[in-house]
Image 1 (tube, rainbow, N blue to C red):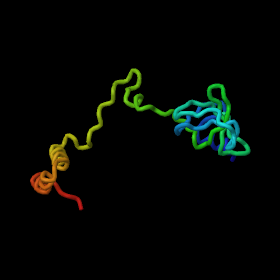
Image 2 (image 1 turned 180 degrees about the vertical axis):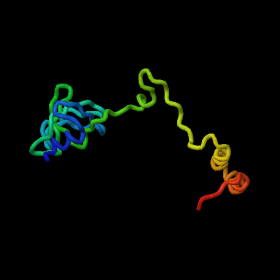
Image 3 (image 1 turned 135 degrees about the vertical axis):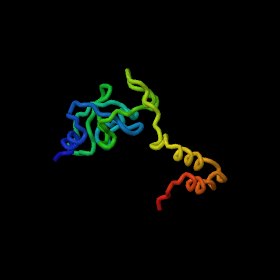
Image 4 (image 1 turned 30 degrees about the vertical axis):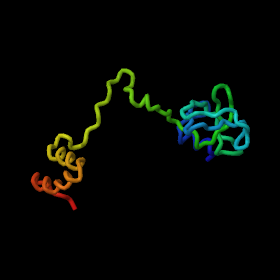
Length: 140
């Protein structure tokens, strides 16, 4: 199976499809491996995938901003990168997700134990007494 077909099956993209650059300042070269640098692409740059180079299958022909060149296969991903700013925003029309809670956040014994373990060394010394007083069993 050729590298281009393998990539197309793996990334679920056909020639002419879009991929994204992963990694910072990936060089778009005029020829695989030894070409001159046409431009350095920042992470998240959308490129049009034109296929793998038949002579150097680990290099892939792409087009970006009207320039055609080659990038290493390892620098391509089908997933668009999400910026930190985008990650913090709810999707358009969606409400903000509720904050994550501890699995036993409603259990008073668990909350008390968490408070004790997060405290100072003196408070930590009280954990065994708290466990005994709360009737908790310690798994060994």
